[in-house]
Image: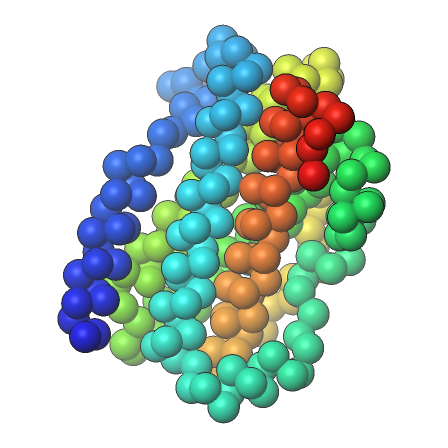
Length: 227
């Protein structure tokens, strides 16, 4: 049964890699010169597609990590402990009424804040997972893939903001310093719980990014019937 699940997971992972269409915003000089040539509608579709895949793979990574390293009693303890996600301090709308009332501009900037605040923590997560003795290669590959695609998503959202909001220069880079505190050598159990919390929180925020972008897409086509 475990072998069968592993085979299906591997096949699904390969299909995700094939399905992932690169935003392809950078040229040889790493500038964002290519995305401006893409129509706003097509760019938004690509950004949404990226966000969907990031959420799906992060959810799979979290489930895989939980199955490998978090025994059931510890899952209950972790849930009851009420660990605070690192992005809780960000001014991101959370209730349905708040989300419905905010402007397109604030939707996009909320997505960008979430994306930028997670880039560094996911790099940190890579370094800690590499120290696990028995971390499956699939988990390492998935988290690395998500980390790389998050940077690509950031590029796409930045260009989308320029296109949709006509903002030539952006002062939107959120300084995440202070959101995420490092511990040089945490205890193993503490490290496992911390990594699990990071993955869980990122998965929730990845779902927010996807939802915000889909709401934005809906507003472009059917402004008065978007839930």
